[in-house]
Image 1: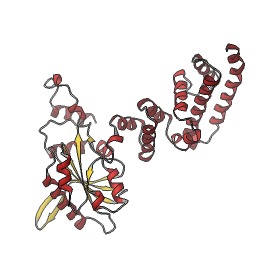
Image 2 (image 1 turned 30 degrees about the vertical axis):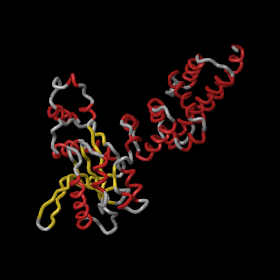
Image 3 (image 1 turned 30 degrees about the horizontal axis):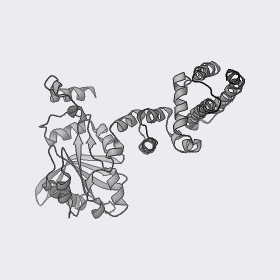
Image 4 (image 1 turned 135 degrees about the horizontal axis):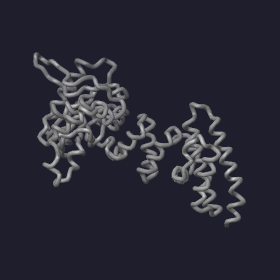
Length: 341
């Protein structure tokens, strides 16, 4: 076996050197794609040699030294990264598929998918979402940590009966349940206005959690109907759905009367704010808690599209009881976070 390694190693290393040089000459606009494919090729080569010729794990250390010596200005040839290349090629055996999809992501995005997810279908789901939304690696990691795949499209709605297809399907996938506001720290007795203020203080993170397409129109948007004043907590315009979205914030459990009030708001916005080319306005009620059957009964028979979802502030909810009362008050922590943002 050792003689076989000595005999084949030189030609194998030479081929890798030629492959690296080819990658270096690629056009600048395709640099990232070429790098990902280069790493796949190296990983696939290592796998093939280990599987077919019985090369051991120590060959990776030797490859790392020789590639660094040949290409001293190139980073990425550490033993650890070579092992990632091998894992990458093992996870995605089809090079054409890698070139078509995964090469659109940076190598560090692909590493995040490898390290944080075990199932190929989930890696593929998050890869496509990353391309669609333009997430950074850190944002991708946050979305995986917050289990976006389990939340997207899960809100209770009446979209199927109030919106035409395919608008209803797209709208359903646009909202999630629950929404994770882990950038907020609120005490249990917080009022809606405080929740709204916290979201606006972290508007970029709030928009990220809402998802692609939401553009903020305003907060406490005034409506006058028959001489009476009404105020919408938050008003958005969704660029893909081509419609306004009203977000009503509740710091307590869902109540049936919330759906009736939202139905009123939607009618008023459709009549007084919408352009004739806009799609029907959508309402989203964000509540601290909700009972599924109560929501179902409340939305049944409503003429306007309404969704109901929970919101959570994971930082507060995850504190062990033994730490309660031993940490700064929520107001103090919120003020500190606002100063450091």
